[in-house]
Amino acid sequence: MNSFLIAMRQATSLTRASNLVEATRVIQDMLVGRRAADPQVSAGLVIVDAPPSRHPKPFQIDPDAEIIEPGAQQAAGLSGRSEGDRSRRLRKPLGETLRILREVRDGPGAFASIPGIGLQERSKHGSSPVAASGAEFLTRSYSCAAGARTYKLYIPAPAQGQPRGLVVMLHGCKQNPDDFATGTGMNTVAEAHGLLVAYPHQTGTDNASSCWNWFRPGDQRRDAGEPCIIAGITAEIMAQFGLDRRRVFVAGLSAGGAMAAVMRETYPELYGAVGIHSGLAYGSANDVMSAFSAMRGDAAVLSRPKPRHPSTPQVRTIVFQGGADRTVHPSNAERIVATTIPPGPHATIQTKADQSVGNRPYTRKIFTNALGQPTLEYWLVEGAGHAWSGGDARGSYADERGPSATGEMVRFFLESGNG
Image (cartoon, rainbow, N blue to C red; front, side):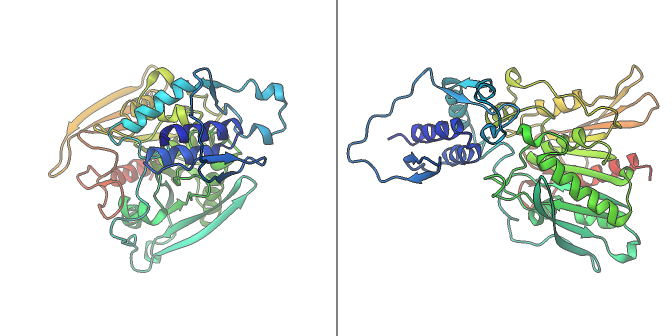
């Protein structure tokens, strides 16, 4: 039996049963070429491996069948909603879903996994992140009503004095804190400026590919889901070291970059600036399928950005994007910029094209507000793919040729943090 059809049958049944985590895993396995088992669904909606039938029935797709999308609440059966409420969830024809998945499957390696990309599990050469003499790189944990995560915290050497700020770094899919710290080199730059660096850890328990769930409605809201957990980690460190928001920043790559955009919108009072590398704008997707569509730059299916949380400060933003990125289409960076341009008739744009020795050429746009203060930078790196610009090749998805996203983000953060 065709493994693609088997996987789609299994994913369809799971989605209709609101078991989205398992459905996502089945789709991921199919996309990366792992063969799906012919399943049977028990009364408890648990998928078990069934022995092959001696007389299997031919599998046919009902062209009128539909995939049920989660809409605003993914776990409808657990939220106390009525059957009438559940019936109003968004639906997508199965034929359209299959079309998108076939394009993903047959594409040029752009979608190795769930939204956010199939990044490698650990540093390429098993190297440990850099820690200066006297510095610490600690493993901690945080829990709240929304859930729990471990995180790594880099504390600069005491010779730097009291830490001067904090950068919260959100890794991409299939990465972990050590790998991300190695690939970005953030600890080295942070040490030079006396900054703390926190690396929250998303595991396979919370997402099959260790992606931050930037595309789920339940993880796009304030005081709920993963934003609540990341904000809690941030606030905990701020309280311990006596930091205020002008010196607190959040940045991420890919799925982590998309989640950094979520943090900018849901907790703007916590962060003085945000860095988004190869990410997506807040509100670009509300389920797995729309996330795939958004990543490939299919503007026809992108949802409108959700409104900014009211009565909160503007968060300065720096965006990095590879011009040859075949995983997150560069149009996503343009969309981030379009939704972040400073308001008011006096906003100005400065454009500079340059190339330093050994690095890729780039175009840098600086947007200023009515007071002439830079509030948005956009770096488009020509020829760069889906990788951290100017990173360390010992980490996964890092492009050594630069320019240095780490150096430029920290420079932008500290400039916007008033020294």
